[in-house]
Amino acid sequence: MPIAPEHLALIYTGPFDAYLYGRASRDPKKKGRSVGSQLSEGRGLCTEQGWPIKREFRDIDRSASRYAKRGREEFEEMIAGIEAGECRILVAWEASRYYRDLDVYIRLRNVCAANGVLLCYNGTVYDLSKRADRKATAQDALQAEDEAEGIRERNLRTARLNAAAGIPQGKLLWGYARRYDPDTGELAEQYVHPKQGPVVRDIFERVAAGQSEYSIVRHLRTKGERLPGQRWEQHHLKNMLNNIGYKGRRSHHGQDVGKSSWPAIVDDELFDAVQQILNDPERRVRKMWAAVHLQSGIAECGHCEMFPQLRIINSRGIPSYQCPEAFDVSMAEEKMDAYVEEAVVTYLESKAAAAAFASSDDQKRTAAARLRAQQLQSQLDEARVLAGKFSATGRPLLSVVSLAALEESLTPQIEEARRDAETFNVPPVLRGLIGQPDVNAVWQEMTIEQRRAVLRAVVNIRLMKARAPGVRRIEPGRIQLTFYGEEGFVSGGRRAEVPPQRAAEPQG
Ligand SMILES: [Zn+2]
Image (cartoon, rainbow, N blue to C red; front, top):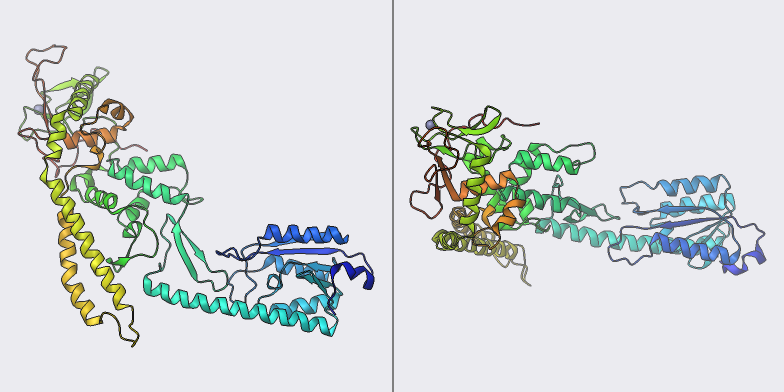
């Protein structure tokens, strides 16, 4: 008969060298005790009864179920220790901690019986060499297995539902982590990785703020590796920036096939802003160049045909902007930067700038288009859900034929609304700058690339010849600035098709 621990010494002779065994399965509902608390309760029992603890085994995140895919190294070590005669009693807390299926139970029973080791769980000591004790533990084992089977069936049902509802398939997106069911090995959840998720969001924000991929990669490398032993490369960003998985959508063969089961890391607005920047043809030729000068490739010569963009030269030890075609205009970099920066900051703080952007009908139009796209998309999503649900009589709430017709009519409308939404022409880099009281403070915090993005968005710069040679100060009209909202302003630069002059050498 099983006996209470306190009666052990009356029946058996000691010493009762003990093995402690604690194990946890990944248990989202936290129904089982943690390994730590199992072991400490076991230690308490051993101390109380005067059983010396020989070893403790922690079997974390491994399931004893026969469906588990992971190994059970600690369990194997424990078996080996028992066979080596290292303990007299094995203490654990719950039956299911020992065995979730009969094979494991039988193995444990045989090894304990063969080596004269007692088994203690649920406050009871069993001698497995005795028939009654074998029967009692076998019943517990059966019950534990039955529970495991129940869990497995529930999980299989969930997995099937998840598949229908768009649980992630295939390769894990960087920025997310997955939780697997410990018993079935099925994917239970894909969640935002606590360390990688914020990095993903930061990358999108930096691109939206006008930083080049090159400088972002450089920044990421200073912060650490992408994965251990793997440094950040530009292609990592490329694959990341246009992946709709990050805004919580699933794609199949390059098509958006609905809402994902995992949470978004970036919202639609940020994602769309980044797409707009990536699809900007000017960026494609630009991004390989690390910007080191504020105005090279931006400010133009005001005299030459086609207004060539100025480049940096070294003029008697002084870095200067110069016309690369006729060498007819030139000005010291520091001087020209100071002038332009002050003018741009003044403009950004002005009511004129606020009015220029606020009066833009584009903004309202694109906001409306974005809303329209979202509404159409959710209509389609709802229809897809309905098509997967069934009435009491077993008929789908929406027939496959109706769904197909709806998809055919909605998809082009959604695409059109998305295209309209992309014409939004206030670059994200200007948010928080237009009409703000202390633009200068923000400006000082910005990187040179962000500043260049602002210049591109709000001002056309032309450098004119000095009226007389050797004039030191900046005469009126020497630097002509045309701001956004003023007559003659050209958005986006007119020379987008021409690669930048070799003003800045790529670094690194
Ligand atoms: Zn020129």
